[in-house]
Image (cartoon, rainbow over all chains, first blue to last red; front, top):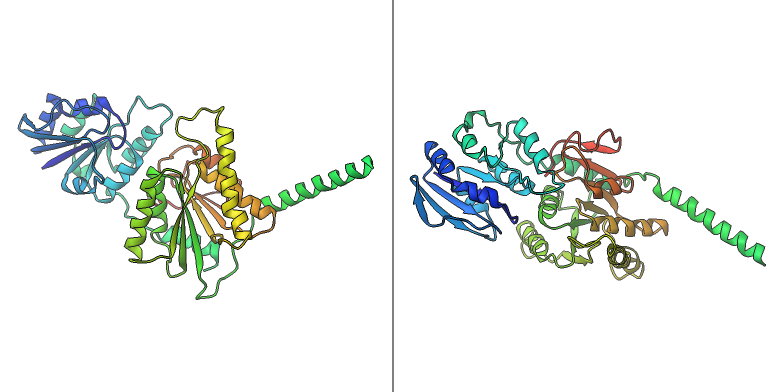
Length: 162
Length: 221
C-alpha cells in the first residue's frame, strides 16, 4: 500500500520533514503501508531511496502531473491547496490535509476545517500527523459528491436563452 | 461664451451619469435563442487553481451551441494555454474553432501597490482594445458570455466590457464564480466584481455573508 505526501508547487518544510519521522513511519506501518512517496516541491527532503520502519521511501520535487501518483496511492497527505483537495476527493482516495500555518492570509484552514466537518477528509497539524494517521478510520469518511455540471450549465443556458 | 461651455459641460456630465446609471442597471438575460443558434463562449483562465476551476465549470456546457471558444489568459501563463489546448483536444480533436487570447496582467504577484496603477492601466487599454475597439472595427467578435473565476485581471476585462456597454456596443453576459477555496468570505476580486456581473455564484453557503445577489447551488467545480 502506498502513501503519498504532496506539497504541490509550494514550499512546506515542516510537513516534508514530518513525513519521514519515526512516529509517522510507524503510524503508516501500523496501517499496513509499505511505501511512501514524497513530492517535496521547493522543500528539501531528509530521506530518499531508503527503507525505514519497514517503509520504502522515495522522494522527488515535481512532475508534470500528480494524477498517476494519486491513482496509485491509498492515502494522500497534502498541504490544504484547493486544487489538490478536489483532485484527490474526486477519485475517492483517503485524504489527510495539513494547512500550512506559515502562510499569511490564506483560507486553507477554513477549507480544510469545513471539509473535515462534512467528513470528506481529516485535517490535522504537523505535530498531530502521526496520531491522525494512526487513528485514521476509512469507515468514518463520507464520500465527496461527484462532479455535477448540470447546475452551472442551466445558469449559462438561462443567460443565453437556450 | 464661458456660460455656453459651462452648460455644454454640465450637459455632458449629466448625460454621462445618466448613461452610467442605465448601464449599471441589472440587465436581463438574452431572449430565447433559436434551436440552432450558435454562440461564442468566453472564459478567463486565471492560472493555477483558477484555470482548473474554470475548465471544470465549462466542461459540462452545451458545446453544440458554443461553436467558437475564446480563452483569455494572463501574459506569461503558458501552462493555462497548454491546459486550454488539452481541454479542446479532449472535447474536439483537431478543432480550430478556438483561440487563446493573451491579456497583460493587472498586477504581478508580489508587485508593490505603488507600481500597480500603471500596470493595471496598460492592462485596461489592452482589454478595451480586445473587447471594444477591435470588435468595433470588425477585426474580432465579442463572446456572448464571459465566465470569470478570478484573480485580479478578470476585473480589468470586466471594466472593458463596461466601456462597450457604455457605448451601446455588444457586450458579453458576465458570470462570476467565486473559487471553491473561499468558504466564509469573498476574495477581493469577488467583492469588486459583485456589483458588475450579471450572475454571481458562490460554492459555499456562507461565502458572501448576507448578499442577495450571490447564488449558491453547491459545489460547481
